[in-house]
Every structure is written in structure tokens, then in C-alpha cells.
Image (cartoon, rainbow, N blue to C red; front, side, top):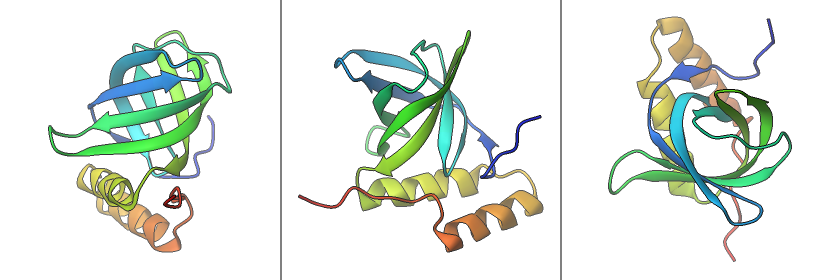
Length: 125
């Protein structure tokens, strides 16, 4: 079994992934952590650079840059390299915390957020 750096939660949200060539792919998030997510219904090669939009509601989304960390028959694992803005940072934290299933998971995620290990935000231009 592979080792994970971050607590992974199960949740389903629509995801838009744009590859390096500008092609948009849509799929469903199967799970997520502060360091990445798995998206079903998309096929892209490992190491492909992508931009990601996780749609939480009509008004709320998480925008990030990342790369395909693994590619499987049913989807791709995307490592989040940078969050596009501070709102995405907050929304990702809330998404993960609201979907923890045990006290242990909640504690682990709280420690991950406090240590700020995964969060990198693109500086404003």
C-alpha cells in the first residue's frame, strides 16, 4: 500500500481540468486531500501540467495549478502545486475538514492545516 502525505477524504464534485494544450476535460472528484485529488472520467499522461477548477457551488470554486501524479484507467491523480488565490486556499481547507469522517481524521487535517505543509498560493501580479 502506498504511503500518503495528507489525510484523504471521499467527496464528489465536478472538476474542470485544462491541459497544457488548452483542452478542457471534465470529470468528477472521487477523493481529495490538501495535497491533491483524484478525478474520474479523465485520461491524461503522467507529469502533464494542468489547471484545475473544483466546482463546489455556483458561487464557490477552488482554482489550482498542478500536475498529473498518476494515471489510471478510470481517471487521474492530480498533485496540487499552487492554489490560485487565498479564497481557494480557504475553500480547500473547509472542503477537507467538512468531509472528515472520524475524530482522528479531523485532528490530522487540523495539524496539516496548522503546519501549512501543502498550501502554496500564486502571488498576486
